[in-house]
Amino acid sequence: MMEALHYRCPCCGSSLTFGAESQQLDCPSCGNSFPLEGLEQAAQINVKNTTDADMHWEQAENAGFDNMENQHLRAYRCQSCGAEILADDVTAATECVYCGNPSIMPGVLEGAYRPDGLIPFKKTKEEAQEAFRNHCKGKKLLPNGFFDESRVEKITGVYVPFWLFQCDAEADVTYNAQKVSIRREGQYEVTRTSHFLVRRGGHIGFNQVPVDGSSKMDDTMMESIEPFDSEKAGEFQIAYLSGYQAQRHDVDAEKCQPRANERIRESVRSMMAGTVQGYTSFTPANTQIELEHGTVRQILMPVWMLNTRWRDQIYTFAMNGQTGRFIGDLPTDKGKFWKWLLGLFLGIGAGGCLIAWLLFALGVL
Image 1 (cartoon, helix red, strand yellow):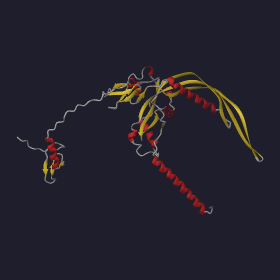
Image 2 (image 1 turned 90 degrees about the vertical axis):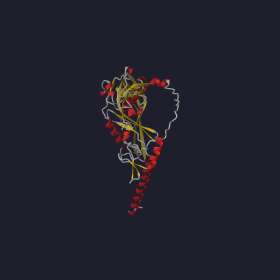
Image 3 (image 1 turned 45 degrees about the vertical axis):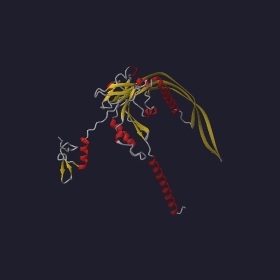
Image 4 (image 1 turned 180 degrees about the vertical axis):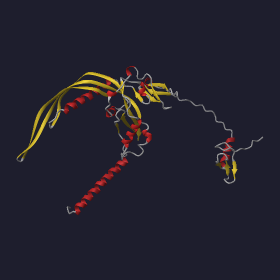
């Protein structure tokens, strides 16, 4: 017995009827119409009993993680959705890439890695996003398409580990200074230069000198968003990390000491030089700075970060999560730059021609 042919709507499965007005097969349920040729071809395909041959797939041999990767990778399970989260060994807090819930990595900030304190975020994500918008606003040479809201949404709050150095400095600095005076004697101009040996010394106390303890963060950028008011650092509590990313230090205090010493000595040199006044010029002849009574502690500092790619180049923006100080370089559209430069030259040329015409009209030329 042959089976009756039955045309069904590919959209809703209802029976199709030929429409005299449309000259097509119409579906009374969903209102769609289909040309006969198309339904005939579909019917023939459905009648055929096609069987795909089984394919044996060979899985490529996976070498797995090497020893160095295994040493720095950690796996955690999200308590919200159960997904596995892979992170490096310095990540203390992040968010689940599957459900977006905040995840804190237990044990990462324990023992020697436990911070002595933490400055909580005072600036919200909305304030960081607005700061980025203002940073881009009015930049006529900014490439079209660089600024969009999807980029703004990627701004992330990160607790960055800092070492805070405290010490006393004894300074003894000698300068060669000059005073220059000029006077006229008849037809001659006489220049008199007096030379002086100037000595400055003093005792200066330094408190809470910060040095970035994360190799992932650019030291210059972190110093550019200072200062942090470390006096307002509270006791470290793990709950502060929820909803933010956090890292433990991977550069210890000993490796950060040279940078701390240089920052302190540079401050001493600047302070001493600021006391040398009343001279035409001066240069340091001998500088002796002794540091003593040094102590160090670790604090987590709040930073809003945005890393974004444009034309195969990474642009990084950072904002102090306590004070709101914002920094970051923006790309420049070369086409817009050359148009602007051409317009500037044309404007200067037109202005020069106008001035020349006015001088000519006044009879000066």
